[in-house]
Length: 358
Image 1: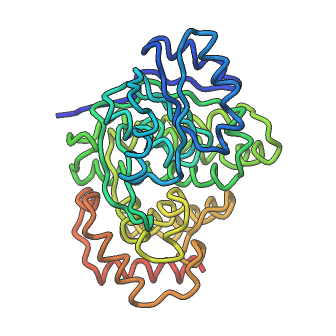
Image 2: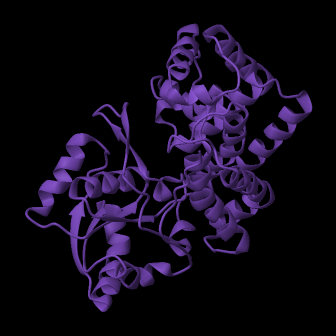
């Protein structure tokens, strides 16, 4: 059995924020905007104007910065008795996850407006909750994917380059994770077998990143969109999201459980964590020296981490290796790796990565 899920509508391009009101009228006439103070100062004038012109009433509620159960409850409290037809989440991954969670509580439509392309959460029906110490608490699911994903690349291109770099990391790992899931006859996020469409999209996204990744980062340096930048953003937000939900995840994302428990790598962006994680996966797969050399060359070209040291862990103890390995091996995504992996094997793979990519 195959289950394939996706956003109802995806809109990308320079200046698309001005289309928001018209797009929202497909879903309803009342909306609550979840946004932090910094993003609000930049985007609210255009959002408010677009909604007013389209006849969509807009309430603004402030995102505190953490996607936690307490934070979600605080968002709902800000609404008072209002029950908007649409929740619009504008910002980074945590803000978007918080908006998803709020829409689930309200049983409303959800529209996402990413301001960075650091991961594929805007298209996904899952959201992550953290505790007050930023430890992963749970991964939750909405009944459906977002109703609208609106990506204004004039906004994305002005974000610091590290966010696009993280998005490239989060995107490229999907090729290897979906391939592993297919080989293992594993399960995707919807609980079905991986679809061939997801595998094709994961491979296509990887090819786009290899061809255009560096050019897209150069576009960010100039803060000017171009065709390469548009292709990379589509890969990082749309293709990556469709790939992982419909194709399945594996070691790279399982490792976020372990990496989030060890500081300072716990503070690294998600996309940088999984970029490192897939390197460990490739070592465990027994890839050839030539393959790993090519992998490393691309990482160095676009500035992705190959080792824990690259992630910021200068003092790597045996306890750190064992903590990461133990929590990773307990993660559900490990079931999508084609062969069993023991803790000593996992630690050995991490040590090997440190040695060969130093």
